[in-house]
Amino acid sequence: MKALYVESSAVLRWLLAEPSGEEVLRKMGSYEPVVSSVLTLVETQRALARFERQGALKAAQSQRLAAMFLREADSWTLLDLTRPILERAAGAFPVEPLRTLDALHLATALEFLRLYDHLAILSCDQRILSNLPALGLPAA
Picture 1 (cartoon, rainbow, N blue to C red):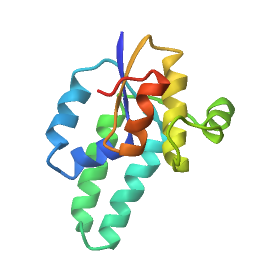
Picture 2 (picture 1 turned 60 degrees about the vertical axis):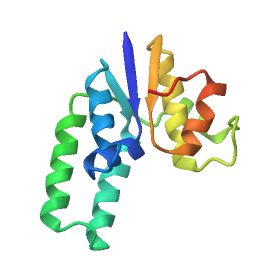
Picture 3 (picture 1 turned 90 degrees about the vertical axis):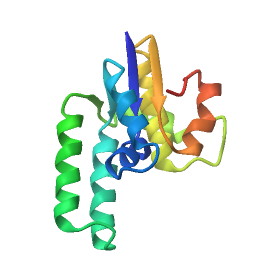
């Protein structure tokens, strides 16, 4: 089974219709299952709220995008931030420095790797992408 781990930076590219957003949506539709961390739910909704407060999105746009995201994410398998994930995230990664939230995403992806033999990572964050080869995780 080919699973896809979707990270927040990729989700936001899709929602905000950035140049690679169509590719993100296409990739999300070509894997089964799509998996992620509960962190993606929080990060994505916080980003939309932040963009609204900064004036980059109108309230109606932010609400529409949040609803669209939650409809899509409703079909995903999500992992909570469990003790093993938190402990792995606190440890060293092949390419440092790594931000805390990025470490949590990578640790969650490694936990999903225990469940799925074939797991690709969909991210637009260079800090995450640079760690994938040494962790044995392919980029989507």
